[in-house]
Length: 514
Picture 1: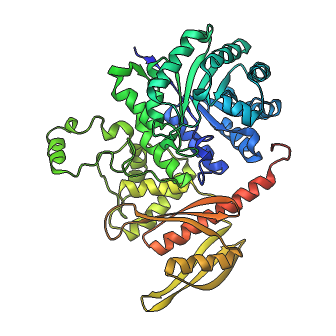
Picture 2: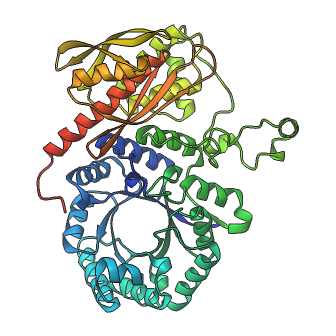
Picture 3: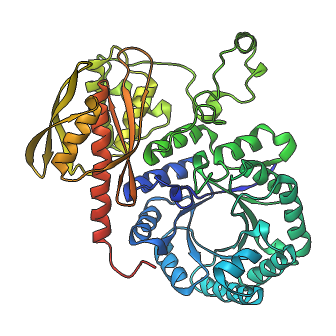
């Protein structure tokens, strides 16, 4: 039996730090439940001290998931560790993850501490965390630009103080696979008590080497890989979970290790995270991109038809992509719809199933056939539902190439309906301006993306928007066979997220912020 590498997913913490990728509490819980289905070993649910919202979200995740370790990040400071424990205390398997910078540039310019002071603080804070929690992870921030001899000392001291995991972060994505392999071997050979702790690695992708560096570290003996879904994260992102896992699975002859990941949940997890964060996956992305299993060149098509292994080193089914295109229509019943959901890997509570089926029937009246992609989009949209502070009642558009576009929009707010008219540079712009009038504020449109869910003239338009209010970006999504309607829904979805975010922050207790 192959040795097992643990998968530590930090989508909810490091991934969410990617600009414009923030999620509300319900969305984080939805992702956490899916990560549990994916069978990650550890999920880092947030940075508890960062905000009351992060603290509440981690606590909500701990209440929902059972078969996974839940961690909260904390700087090597007593207050951070106190709040981290408050966040994960009720988890089935809690972990406190504390860190401090160890590179010369970070110690001198950020911490303004000497190496000896950093070493002393590490020992004190690991011991401090240990009084709360038996499972304590210690990370040496910017480890790959640190003096290896200092790393050996600090890891030895952290393990002696009670750390159960020591982590080597390539914080700025600076190292290369050759250097990473040498560093890991050096740690294993020069830290006398390294056998008493898990050795982990956390790689960023600034030079596009995050996955390669992680795999090099695994080859050198690392037993925990830290990563995110779709590789999201600060700057250029993190090593992508799906790429690491499928590389280990596909090339087990080389790596001779395995994970406990249910790879058939990979595609669904990728789509859910992309939907909730508004961070779309590029078409040529490895494993989960739209083109990952597409073949256009004639010679490739001929080869695949003769034998799929000619150009496919893994199957679409291995990541959860359905190879058949069963379609449903307006005459399909609830049983067929529910059966199709189960086949696609979705198990919905009765209320969510009822809502999804209702939306399916509405869509089926507009389309001749409803494809898997349509169903997936509907279910994911329902998963991302938030309270509707404003809801769309109706809209009327007057537009053409020789007149100024005009939109009349009616919204419902707190049980009252109001209507406004606005002009704009095209029907979508006019609708957005009418909504701004009704809401009573203007938003900066950071991005607008429209794509077809399926092929054909009756395809649903899937609109993703990002709007900025002050310094915060909110993402929204709208689905409709009418692209103006889907645009209005997406814009309102983002606005409703803003109101939900403000409401949740106001309801949190004071004293949890830095």
